[in-house]
Length: 262
Image (cartoon, rainbow, N blue to C red; front, side):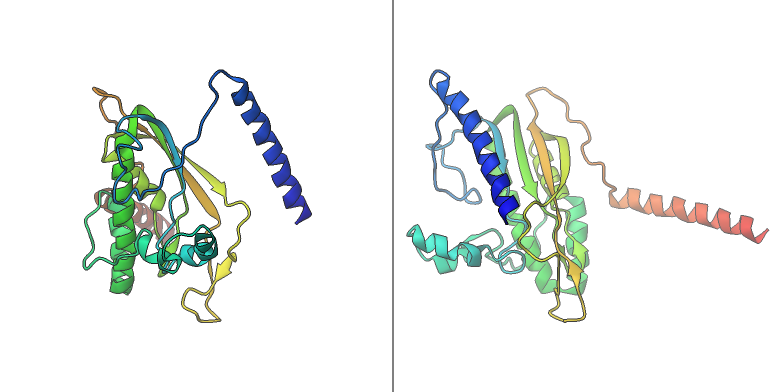
């Protein structure tokens, strides 16, 4: 504990030093705090379209009901801040409203993953799809306020549902790509100061344990300028490529088996 406190203190001191340099500059930086839900829209009286150089954010890794208990963890602070109905936070967060059917989203790999979950548990698949639908709505609104040439940096984790890893990093890349953005890079890092256990029991069976999220992905996207031709972004297999790769692998294995029999 003491080492963490020391590290955090040093980090704050470095940050304070950097901020003091900005303050000495003419005008200096300013900060404004607005309250709105990006899923529902971004009010133009707060943030105009095509006006933001960079967005840095870490959206929820999944819905509160089945992933991280965001509502539970923030209930005390929400009540202390005087927010209305702090006990109803979960219903207002991404995925809080369950859809009646799985929506079509512009991410093939995500769609394939949700289909795998649906084969095991249709109800859980709807919960997962409802979260990603609202994440897509949020990204659609955020994408409009960033300037051409501007950046979006999203920090996310890929959770598991029914033993299947959800490719949230790929989904975010695909969502932005469908809105005229190109991928700059995806950074992979170990989650620092992880509070959740490294392993849990997703089925509540004591003998069945699974690993929780231990890594995060920082997805960096850039809005293309007018007239710039889009390059192919996805480096992941589509269904046809995946089938072709499996076929080629099978041929190689058959050839090796024939050599061994000789």
